[in-house]
Amino acid sequence: MMMMNARVRPGPRVWMRSLAAAGAVALAGPALAVNDLKGGPGVNQLNLHEPVTRIAADQMWLHNMMLIICLAIFVAVFGVMFYSIFKHRKSKGAVPAHFHESVAVEIAWTVVPFLIVIGMALPATKVVVAMKDTTNADLTIKATGYQWKWGYDYLKGEGEGIGFLSTLDSSQRQSSDSGAPEAVDNYLLKVDNPLVVPVDKKVRIITTANDVIHAWMVPAFGVKQDAIPGFVRDTWFKAEKVGDYYGQCAELCGKEHAYMPIHVKVLSAADYAAWVDGKKKEMAAKADDPSKVWEQAALVARGEKVYAANCAVCHKPDGKGAGPIKALDGSAIVTDADKLKQIDVLLHGRLDKGMPAWNTLSDTEIAAVVTYTKNSWSNQTGQTVQPAEVLAARK
Image (cartoon, rainbow, N blue to C red; front, side):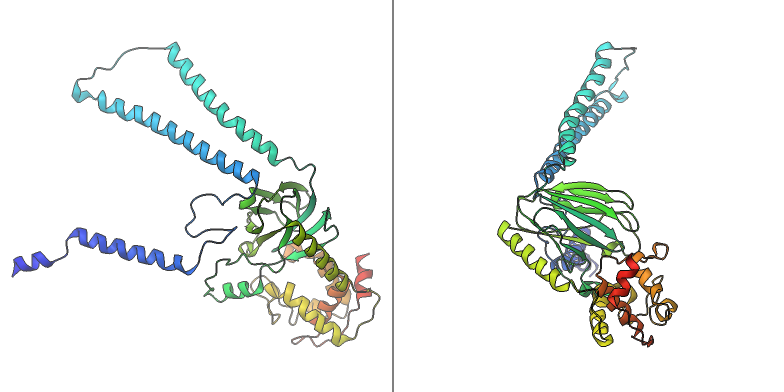
């Protein structure tokens, strides 16, 4: 009986195979829930992103070339070392040689590393110089980092005058806050307003920031540039393929750093021209006359939409705030009879308290959202803020 039991009891190899199979299933489970994101990260990605610019392709070539050189050096050095240890070990009667300086060896281990470094530095320098050449751009766009969103202003080229904010899609933020996020390919990478550029055009990106240091990074373009308050930096890219490309803020910028994605949509020349035309018409429709006097109900309705698109992420839809984010429901500034106090906060922000400036909103949008917060939840102040008051406060 003991012999029979011994025969049927799984051996170590069977257990190892079972564990390996279970591990493979466990690893495959989450991986099957999402797929590679075209233009963004891949499932279990090891290599760099697929390049869609000449610079990114050169960066990948440099990466592979230097990896091969380092691997060759590693194999050569450790190969000689292990061969010497094995071949000239004491057990085989090896007798150590006694010598001092060797001119040939000294020259060899000085010249050879020098040539290797030069061979790596020359192509790397060429790529770095090309990365910094932002001249002769077809399109110039300013990217401003805010806690925690990006503002884009088209300064030069087709689309000049267009400006908007790009914020994490509210549905993905809610999914993250739920603690059980939905398994989607573009998790925490979907935005409400992607940056749109034409294909095969040199796009210069000017970076700065409104509050703390951010970094504008799109791996498929080979671009990463810090955005520093009070400073202006620039970089560029020229996308060679139409499509959607993703990145994130690459500088630890605060508690919501993970919720600051970048989405660049590259369009054909015809589609880009159509987008520019549509965007300008949209902006013209939103360009309200600041001298217009609004009814309170209309401002509240408009302000509710502005609040949901820009403020609810931090202050919550119910105005209760969270953690260091102050509640607007019952806020002393919101309920204060002096309306200029809240207007000033929106126009200039409170960087020491994590509140960015919202001066990119129009006078009507600011008037609407202030009126909305003053007459929502428990803040039934009855106060109305007109766009002309905001316009006067800007001066």
